[in-house]
Length: 330
Ligand code: ADE
Ligand code: ZN
Image (cartoon, rainbow, N blue to C red; front, top):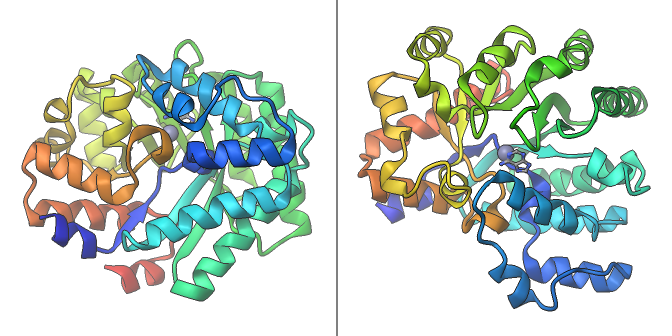
């Protein structure tokens, strides 16, 4: 089954580009940019990747973000990631970036996007891999700060009309930060033609998924696995054919499920006929890139080849590609 997964063309829709920074790169960039880290060595940092919840992970993730300073840093990070997932036969990617975790430290918005975009252009030229950017609002910060980030995005798009920014997302600490706090930002983003996605139902309750649908008017729900606590919501997600970007390794590493055998992905896919997709979230932290996520969940839940193809096709269907572009990938 692993070799079947290796050659299966894959799409990734839930990937935080800052979550691709491997500990070696964190140390290398920290040294180059004179950033002090709280861990003594690469091994020390890697051994700290044992999380009991989302917040423990985010504390380390934001700390590591501080090593990214120049446009070339963002380019190198993105290029290293794209090179890695090209080996997994990733054919299309819609990546998340958290501009606020960089602009808050004095890094200019365009430095972040220019660096990532440059690597994306090279991946398309070299391998035909297509990709898009979704800018995320950090929900632990104020809605006013999120609106500022959206305004920077709209200004950047005005200056760079061909930029691949296609959507707005909502991420970071979910508990006690309901989507309704951010509805004005999402309304404005939609008015400017951006697509909407939101992390919901990872650690937060199913009502955050409902709010994401009703108030943020999302096109996809990121994670969404806690929908099973509300059967009316499951029915609605199925009727809407609302995609869920599920991240198996992440869910185990952040203790959403105790072990992979307990993961509800197969139940969501088969019993409830939901548009489930497989993604890696923050692969440098959660023990694997897109291929490993497919393999781990396939082995633990004994997924058939047909089910794996269905999951991969769901990824194409749930993407923000045009119908014509999707047709070339199916
Ligand atoms: N930012 C990076 N990874 C995240 C996750 N899994 N959930 C929420 N915010 C994130
Ligand atoms: Zn995520």
